[in-house]
Length: 139
Image (cartoon, rainbow, N blue to C red; front, side):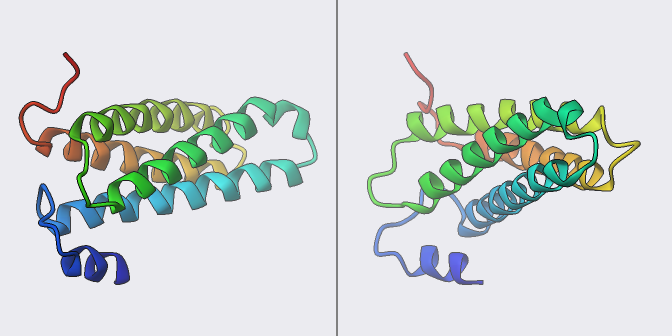
């Protein structure tokens, strides 16, 4: 896994265990891909107009996850407050997306898959938040 290798090879010491950071980054990337794919699958459905909100939420969640992964992969002078804010946003985006996909899960397998990816990502982001160093909150 290149992400773990890159972070481990970084000249700056990460603020937490490399495995914790990479697990979160991998969950974020997987969720972004699932959300993007789910949005695309929704566009391919016959009753696409009933999936407009799902598509929008999928794309928003994918963008938030992708941005969060990019912030976490950067190790030089990482700003814990920014990491916390971005992870908080990601938790919210994943929760909203999972709820929206849940409302379509009975009819669409892609929504079930996306819901699971979002739930997993939300959980891992919450775990990452709990491990951020003290003083990582806004004043």
